[in-house]
Length: 452
Image 1 (cartoon, rainbow, N blue to C red):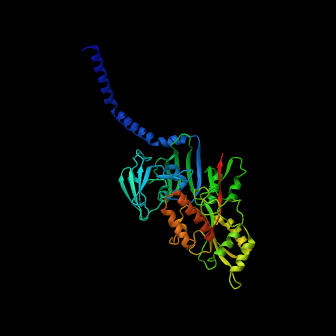
Image 2: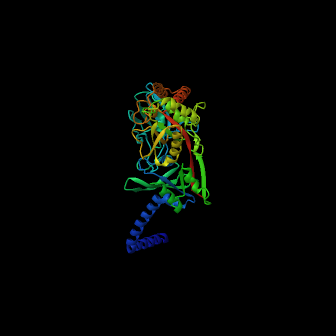
Image 3: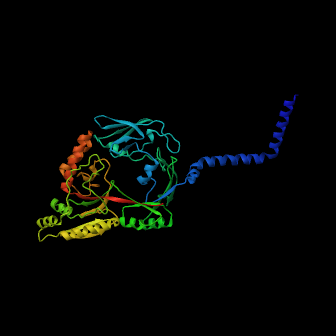
């Protein structure tokens, strides 16, 4: 037996002896090491996020479930099939391309390959779970899905701009991933923590509050570092704080709108509805004047759209001509608590021109009203079929019935040529302004209050 063999035998018996004497400790150490490594791997995103220098905690008012989180959050944590670019054109995101078949009644979308959910599982067409009324879907293969429509609908891809999210809050291709979340009563979300997929992004937490007072208290106590509001008087409270940044921007996704019940006893007269338009004061302190139902950022916006200028004398003359001495110019005015300041200003002007105004503050849209003041979120695409078409009894809250408007809305959905659609929606804006089912007041200023 040579020297090498003797050394091997020696170390062999040494190891065997060590194991026999310490096998219990070795087993325990191995098991603990396994769990420690597993814990580190699974917790790495959380640990990593804690080490990030910049952290932002945003306060949001409202109650949300896992199925309806705000777009502000869902757009950070996931991507849609398609999205609008800066010019207002639809571009593919998770989709690679799409085409039309069957007389423009079948849309076929091709999904990009090698896409993965945040949990590491592969994303396929089978994961798409759209539930559109009157539209059938069929998965052709892992990367192809068909949508079957009953009739041509040129704006259908616009319905696919919502971020794709798998329950519970699993995203794909977003700037952030959900680290964890907290629920109240097993339903309402109270907190969502996001960690970034890019190094230069801040760690983000969203906390939810029932009302404005709770939100403000949370900001003052340091529970949150940022919040947004359209209330100038609220934002101005923090304008002079030395450790606070005060930012103002215009929100062109919303319009403060005075909806008019076109079938009410008094406002079924188009001229009387116009008298309301002439009575609207200047709201430039609250936002940018809106000239119609379509945003100036849209490709379909009509720059030459006529507007009603503030003219009390003209408003009074219309009221005098339209309402006899035996009639009452009484109108029921409804709004929500958040907009009471705007409503009070409108009430004063309407009373000054001859209307008797009964102002009501509610937490829901009433079934019957004369005028209703609220923030309206028009769709990005100029198609507004659901809001103005006479058949849409649920969302056409103005009860508008106009054959020309119906026809324009229908044509706008059928035509795919952008130039032709633009002309259709130019005509639509003119007719709506003339018919006055609503008065589009302003695009609100939005204020972001954040700690430095």
